[in-house]
Length: 526
Image (cartoon, rainbow, N blue to C red; front, side, top):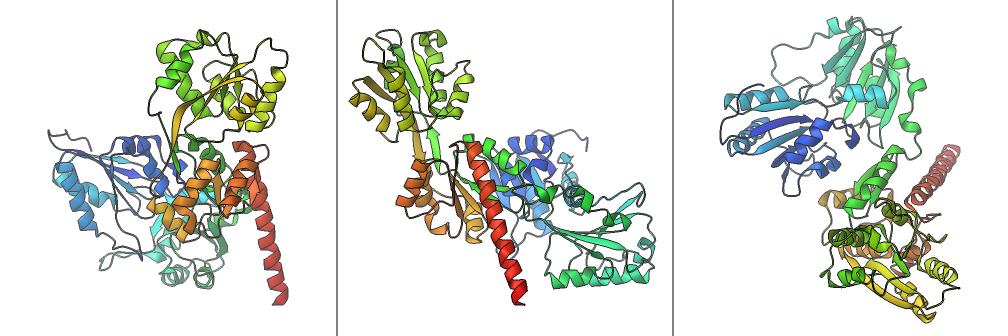
């Protein structure tokens, strides 16, 4: 907008959230969310986008259809002005693009009237997303050289109405926004204006989400499709010859986890890698950490264990998790350097823990084939058979966990010391967005990646898990789930995040086969 910012006045960013997939947010949009004091967002905005906000940022949902009252546009404008005049940085987060049928221009005008600086951050609008995700090109060298973005829902009382007779002769593709309830009106108007009844058409609902749906039809049958399939917003209708060019571009719906929703329960700082892989495979993800990673109550024992690296020295330093590596190594580097580890061998329970060591330019001397305490104890005992003295072993672990490794090594005559490098603390309350999704029966899978997470999950969401399928990372975690009264649907093999992902993919294929079989049986009965 270009105006100078006055002292004491904040700034408003009208940010396009994109069509739904949180990965389609622009980098500039993410930057704005990360620095905002307050975020006002539409109910259709993917809640995952709010994870980019500061922890202390205020988040205001502007109403949900059927649940809470929807804010009026004057109320939104007034709130934006109020917040900005108080000196805040405000993000107005809008579905799609803020100035494509999103009333962003009205909000910008209201802000400019009060001398409030505005920045408009574009987003991926639904028509463009439909072209990419449903494989329906808006332009085509042979069929369409122009695109018209058209609203199917005019403002009540608007003097100048759309001229569908002229749109019927538009030389390209029509993309109709917000046209579900008025489909019978505008399809009839287009046909009366001269657009052939057999013109290819498509309906795309919830573009870019894991439950995206696409119906191919014609202009004449489009309204009938909406009624027969009970199609509800948000929907984009695409009309024109290019809409026929669908099948060659159907990559989105062919991903192995398309149609699946996964609730990830790992600590927030550890969840992003798994979430990224799930979304790459087509799943929609929800994040509900069930435990938090915190420093130990005191560093005294950790510091003492580090001091013993020099005298008398450890034969083995054993890390049971990537969190333990980070906590203990960071503490070591605060007071010394990695050369203090020269006399010790390093052991890691699992490939992820070994990878965490590599981040410190250290290579594990021992990674057991079986990623659990029993596998580690057997491997250390085997590697220490020819020692001239009882091995001195330091176990770096969390505040809670099994004592199998310490007990086994101690029983074998080794000198074992256990040190708590971090605390695993239960999350006290579930995210309301996650609770709503679980109440709707939406999450298809729930990941369970440790016994601590299993117990916290039961306490936090047990009565809401319903028919969700549980994906366990290991036999030990599965045993804990069974103790709590849950039967895991799949179990990772190997017991890694990639193994868990593969298990979910395999389990989803089996579920899809069951659904297809039931559908076929229903057709036979009919």
